[in-house]
Length: 349
Image (cartoon, rainbow, N blue to C red):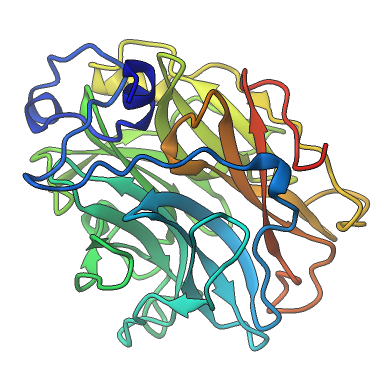
């Protein structure tokens, strides 16, 4: 493995850096538990891929995460059935062309459903899946954030609450959780509110996912006069980045951290952001404003959290309409790639 590839694949900071905040590097060094395999993804046979990548006749497939581990690709996503029930779906592939049948992360009967998974590797080597209860937590309680851990995306820990002390009222709606072990410590991003919504950041004062969590505030990001959602924090090309979706029109945007990544308050300040222009393909004939009658390049996620073979890959959700599957439409997953984070292409394009 080359040094560049090793840095690109590295997913977490060493535990000491998380707790002390004295490490300046924007790139997360690889830290896995003793004896854990190094999960190096194979080259992606781009010319052999065809969009859409992953589809289902029984579910809308959206809000994806896609990582490589144990010799296979693992896609996690919101799976919405025709009755509008939400679960976290899982599919596996060796080559990104042939996929297993969709299974579900075990449902927590204490909540209404689960949605919007984000996947990151923790300093101990376990994968952390963050998500929200949806469309409600318990009867009369707004969605809340949770996490589980896994080594193989087959067996999961029991669900654990994530940051509930930040907004403890039953009416406090929290969705789209994303965590990152950074030079400033363990950071949590999420969207708060129902009618008036905000992007919020918090920091774990112990370095643990169980907190206690302290609110940092609302980052200075506005897109189309509105907030953003569906977050992913990660180092790319030597800088800390935030990939997110505009709350209005559901467009993918990439932001760059403006300040010192060692300072917790610096995580509230980001570049203006750049929209990622992903080609829309003929199999998605949707027209008009995105996010209204159809979806294109919604809920994007950097595949495996870093470059692979000189390209950065995105996986995202497209839907030609929003009339079925609880208003989400027949959403599917599709990839795009770029060498410079500016120009993006699709398979066959």
